[in-house]
Image 1 (cartoon, rainbow, N blue to C red):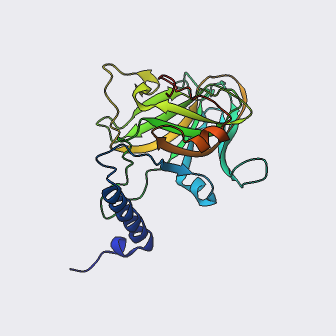
Image 2: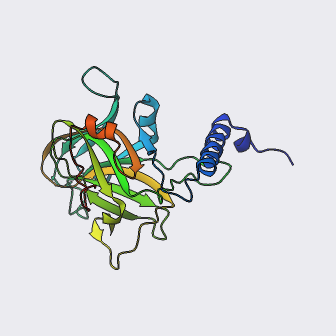
Length: 249
């Protein structure tokens, strides 16, 4: 049997090898049977190419006038390398599309990741308690969105991105159990547990419908079982307030 061009593609081979190494590490460190202590990186924006693996969405897609852009900002003495999510919100309705009754939103998420020899590329965050984001917020009402390999493709699990120090770099921890299942912005009942073994995408949206510019910086997104002492020192905090949960002991 001849190998297909897909199997021979360098990117496919590298992704498959990386996934094999990850599985091997889990087996050797027994992370599958005990609580992992190391963070599990999902999105890291120190690499400029990472921006090309993400996509924006806004009401301009349906004729609205909001805008949304992504750019990678290199590391400097004052900030880490990060993804800049910026643009402007408009609640104006398109005159030539009477079916559009609501605008004023923008967002971004990673694109579906390419497959490996093991199948679809999905994140298994089941061994972890929190989703962590290193951000610098402008204080607007952002939501963190997690999409899984759900039966309903358009379902999203959402939670407010609670920034404690707008204008400063900080780490936000969100308990995975605190996410709420939604579909097209509406809460879905009955609520079902997030399929944490099969996470497809992670992203952020702005839906406060307040006209004007927005600017959010994100340096990395990862799954965690709590901040390390080094991370807590970096964040200049003596305690860790968990969104949707309690304080870390």
